[in-house]
Image 1 (tube, rainbow, N blue to C red):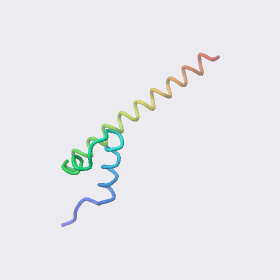
Image 2: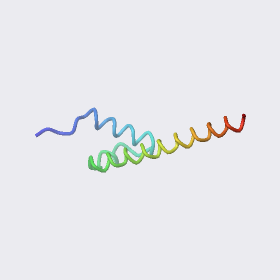
Image 3: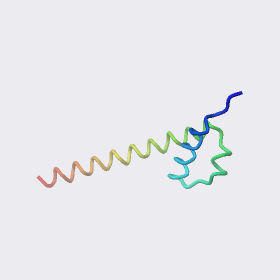
Length: 65
């Protein structure tokens, strides 16, 4: 039986713990599908923040003109 790739597991745990500061133990107890879902949700948040920052920069530049 083949398990989940350890490199991928470490990436998911590092990603979620970096953004949400959840413990290693809590993340290890999650099913893969739940960890993956949290990674997706964090990525959505990051995209929204980046988009918002881009829009603010554009508005600031336009206001300077």
